[in-house]
Image (cartoon, rainbow, N blue to C red):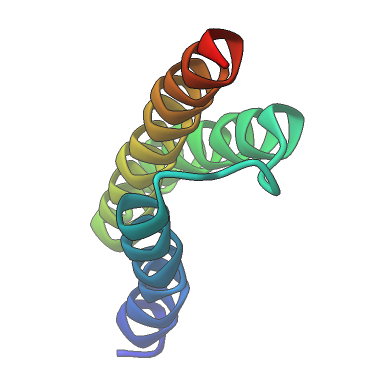
Length: 89
């Protein structure tokens, strides 16, 4: 139960950022490096979960990687879209 609770709390931290990014169409304050390192770390946790045969570690970090990828794609898309608009004016 402790692992599941920790996973839910950790993953819920991504939701406000995704919501705010979608609403404002801006993720300038997020660093590609931070998102990339976080994604790499979570991927390593997935591997560790396989070695430990721990479905909670695997599942929580798999969902975390997916949420991270969503943020990376949003940052790329909105950053590209924002620079195209700036270049027009």
